[in-house]
Length: 166
Image (cartoon, rainbow, N blue to C red; front, side, top):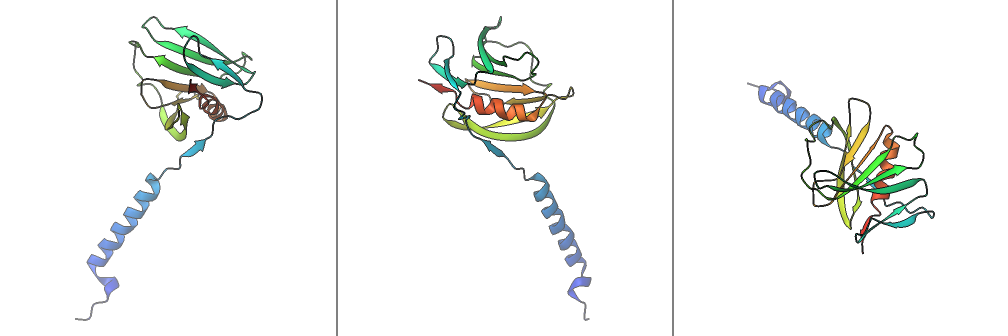
């Protein structure tokens, strides 16, 4: 019996398996871009309240200390121009937050940046309302960014990446 290799049932199964494997790997591979700390020349070093933490902010952003009812200590970053819809938060003390993170939306992308001298991966979600929300991994100190423009998320992450402890 002279059967050709291409006619074999095993060969067809192997071909289908390999094609499926290649397709699966190509679909699951994600590209994660790196965001560098903002190095604009017009940045001003700003202390976060009475803490040992400092951040470099451009003149078009302000930072305010916000003490939550549940014991959370946040520093809210917002633009001077109130028509802008970008917003950032650095949480130094978590407290006992009310609610959950279950309404983040669908994962849109991931970005890496420096955060307190460590490389972290930000998860960026697109909400049902069309906003983008980015979060650092859950640790003692966390950060988030929100905007209706993905480019604003990158800008906020580059500002938050300047956070240092002295």
